[in-house]
Length: 362
Ligand SMILES: Cc1ncc(COP(=O)(O)O)c(C=O)c1O
Image 1 (spheres, helix red, strand yellow):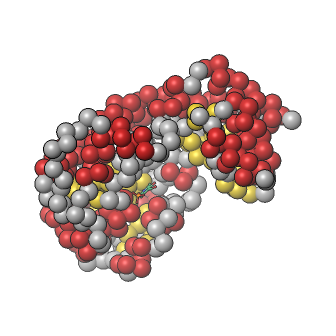
Image 2 (cartoon, rainbow, N blue to C red; image 1 turned 180 degrees about the vertical axis):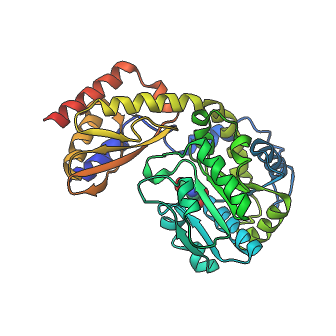
C-alpha cells in the first residue's frame, strides 16, 4: 500500500474525525426522520405543505419575498444566472476564477445556456470593489461566493459587500450570492442572514455543508424571479415528484445546527491555531473567518501522507483522507469544523498535534 492509500485507509478506520459531523451513513437518515409523524404527506411536483412551508420559512430567514427548493445548488445557480441574463438581454456573467460554476460543473452554464463568463480578481484572493469597478465588459450579473471555498473560505469585509452591492444597483447589474455556506459566515460578520442577503438580488443556500443534511438547496429572491425559476426547474428535471426526504432532513439539520455556527467558528479558530503551531504546517486563512480553512503542509504529498497516516493510526483521530498537491514541495487539505471537534478530549487532541509536530520535525 502506498502512502496515499495508507492515508485514506487510516482515515476510514478512525472512529473520530477532527472535522465534519460524523460519517454520512444510514444513521444520518434515521435521526432526521425519527420524530416525524408517519401520516405526514409527501410534496408532489413542487406543491404541498411540506415543500411550501419550508420554502416560506427559508424566504423569511433570508429576508426575501419567495424561495424555491432545488435538489442541488448546481441546478439552482445555473438557473438563477440564466434568469438574470434573460432579464438584462445579455448572456454574460462575472464571478471568481475558482467559482464552483467555473471549475466543478463541467461548464454547465456555457454548454447549456451559452452564457459567457468574466473572471474577476486573481485566483488566490477574494473579489474586491476595485475588481468590480475595473471590469471593462458589461455583464448581466455578478456572483459572489461567501466564503470563497477554494481559497480556504476567505471573505471580503462587510463594507466591501455593501460597496459592491451599491455599485451593482447603480449600474443595473444583478448581484447573486453563492451562499452554499452562508450560515457559516454569519458569526464572523456579526449579521443576520437577512442583513447579508439584503445586499443581493438572489441567494442560494445549501443544506449539506455546515448544516450537514443529505442534499438540497434553496434559491431565494423576489416572487417573479422565483416563478421563472420553477419553469427552469421543470426543464432541468429538478421537479421530482417527491423531494420530501431532502426537505424534511434539511429542516431537521437546519434546526439542529444553525444555532451551532458560532461554536463551529470558535472551534475552527482554535483548531487552526493547533495546526499553525506545528513545524512546517500553516492554515489559509491563518485565522479562519468561518468554520472552514485549508491546511498547507511544506512537504511533498507522499511524505506528508505518511506522517498524517501515522498520526491517524496512532491516535484514531481522522485528520484527512486525501492530500492535494500544490507543487512539488507543498500539499494541502480542507478542514470544515462540525459537531465532532467539540467531542474530542483535549488531551487526545494535544497528543495528536504533538505527534504531527514531531513527525514534521523529523
Ligand atoms: C460554493 C459552492 N457552490 C455551489 C455548490 C453546488 O452545490 P450542489 O452540490 O448542491 O450542486 C457547492 C458544492 O460543493 C459549493 O461548494
